[in-house]
Amino acid sequence: MENKNMTEKTKVKICGLMRLEDVAYVNDYQPEYVGFVFAKTRRQVNGDWAKRLRLFLDPQIQTVGVFVNESVDVIAGLCENKTIHVVQLHGDEDEAYISDLKKKVGNPIVKAVRVREQQDVWRAEQLPCDYLLLDTYVKGQYGGSGKTFDLELIPKLTKPFFLAGGLTADNVQEKIKACHPYAVDISSGVEGDDGWKDREKIRLFIDKVREEQ
Image (cartoon, rainbow, N blue to C red):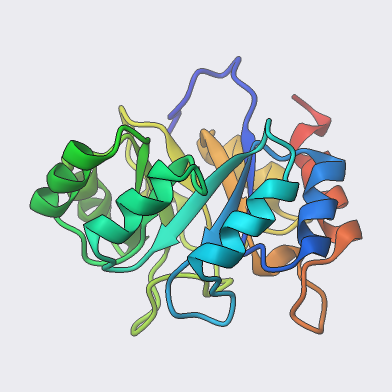
């Protein structure tokens, strides 16, 4: 299950930023990626607010737009005005959709896979995306469940992948050693009981990822 060069450092994506406070936290601790969720979830932000948050974000941090079955033109607009650097597709987007999107944007594209069996991952790897994001399958949800999945279901891949699903500071080192992802992706695992991003949890998670690398 070795899916990246063992000498590469695993990158971090903190997903679901909503507030200026969240931006301040990530500016302090410097994950490689942050996510703005444009899909209809409790963490949803609109394009205008995401663009404003982007202005306060350290320019070294890459922004990822998270979409579920969104219009290609809407995504292209957010890429063109530099609100997002990377596109993450979390819905039912197929080969034709991704090919159409690639004609309109030059930004990297991540396709999320809700993993039930190895075939789910194999099928996704054939799509014309640049990265995969492997997440837990939960019926009726496109992601963000906060639940883990069996890492033995991850085959040897040629495309780099983000690992998501139930990650915490307590388990992330074990997960990285088990499947060597390109990046780890966390949202609810760095939130407090109030549902907002927590500065200390973000710090601890990023420290754990980088501790032994």
